[in-house]
Length: 316
Image (cartoon, rainbow, N blue to C red; front, top):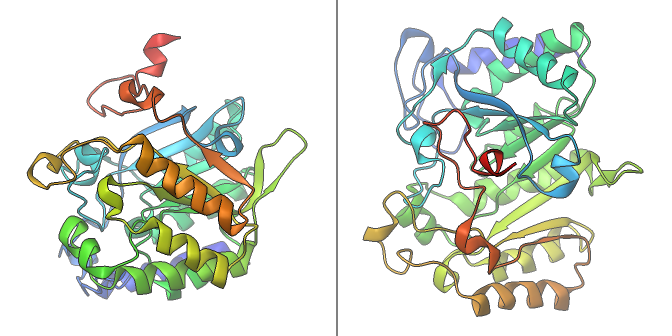
C-alpha cells in the first residue's frame, strides 16, 4: 500500500469534509469548520506512554498514545471533554507528528495509539507514511468513538493494524440525545464490520500484546441507555463470538452529565453484571472486564490541564 498516495486521496476530502457521518462538507483548507470545529492543521493535546489501556494494548511498556483535540461526537458525559469539546491542544505539523510516533517507539511503547482520530485521518496517514519511511514498525491502533464513515475506513485497509472502536449506542435516539450524532448505529455498525473484514479477531504475540485485529469497547451507561445488550447480540450475529470485548465499568458523571438523568449517577454493579453475564451467555470468551468497585476512585480519569494527565503517574 502506498501510504503517501492514500494520504493525498484522503487530504482532498477536506475540501468538502465528509470524513464522518455528519457529512458537513466544510472546506477545511480555507478555514471553514463543521460540527467538530476542527481546522486543517491537526491539534494535539499530548503524546505519552499510556499504561491505562486494556492489557493487550498497554502491555508492560505502555501504549504510545497521541491524544487529539476536537471530536465529531458531543457526548455530554465525555471524560476527555477538555480536549474533545473545549478543543484544548496545540497545532502540530506532520513532521512533528511523525517525530512523536518515532519517539514513542524508541521509548519502548508497544504501539502508536491515535485517540479521536476520525477528523484527523488524512493528517495521521500522512504522518504515518513519513514515520514508516524513517523506521516506524510498531502497530497503529485506531482508537475511535465509533462515528466513522465506512468508506473512509475502507481507505485505511493495510494502514491500520488494530482497530479499537467504541460501539456506544444501539439506538439512534439516545445517540442524538446524549452525543448529538445522527444515524450512529448505521455508521458505527457498518464501519465496525469493515474493520473486522480488514483485520479479523485480535491477535497477540507470545507476551499477550496485540499485533493485529479488532477490539470492541462497550461502555456500560446508567440504566443501560447505551443498549449494550443489543450491541452484543449484533456482534454475535454479524461478526463472531471470537471478537475481543472490552466491557467498561469506568463511566463517571463528568462534564455536563449532571443535567441529564440518569447519566447524573455512576453505574450500579448490577447493571455491569447484567452485561457481562449476557456476553458470557452468548459465548464470548475473550476480552477484558473491569473491577466496578475499584473505579469509584479511578486513577485513569484524565486531567489534560496537568503535566501528568493521569493520576496513576503521581502514584508511582
